[in-house]
Structures are given as C-alpha cells and as structure tokens.
Length: 106
Image 1 (cartoon, rainbow, N blue to C red):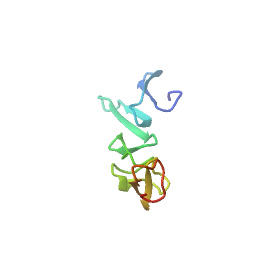
Image 2: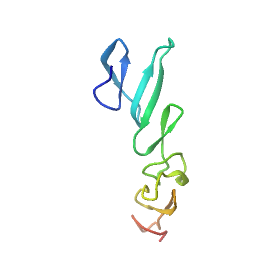
Image 3: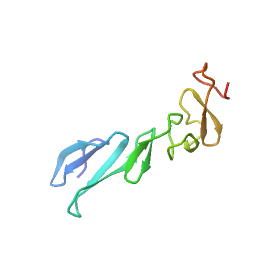
Image 4: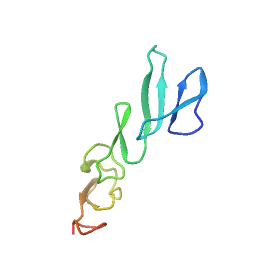
C-alpha cells in the first residue's frame, strides 16, 4: 500500500493507486485515517528543510541542511550555501558582499 514514488502519499486508503503529492519540503509523507478524521504528516524532509511537528519548514537561507530555523542550526560545516561560510561547527555566516564563495568572512 505505497505510492510508486517518494514525495507522494496515498489519498484514499481503499485505493493504493490514488496518490497525491506531498507538500513542498516533504520527501516522504503519509495520511492516517484510522481515527476517523485524516491526519497528515511529513515523515521525511527534503534537503533544505527540517522536521517540525509533522511538517517540514525551510532552513535559513545560509544552510543547505539544518535542524532548525536559524543559521546556527546548520547540520555540518560543509552545509553552507553559496555566499556563506562555516564560522563555527554548525553556523553559516555571510561572506563579504563581493564574494560568491569564501572560507572566511572576506
């Protein structure tokens, strides 16, 4: 009872081919109708998003991957987007405005 591709979920439990696309940011999601009213949940987030109570929220623009909403919650030192550098273990800080990539602030 799975939809063929990730980022889709079964819309109707009685028909496993009736699938709908997960919301933006969810790479895997599911809907549970066992309690009578459907409850939707993201079960895995796409890169650039982090899990937050059944949904996926966008990371800070500095981070490629993160565990929360600020630039201090990037997941690794190499997870900064262009225009940012690793200023601490999990923090991405902006490069000088004249640089697209940098290893320190300027």
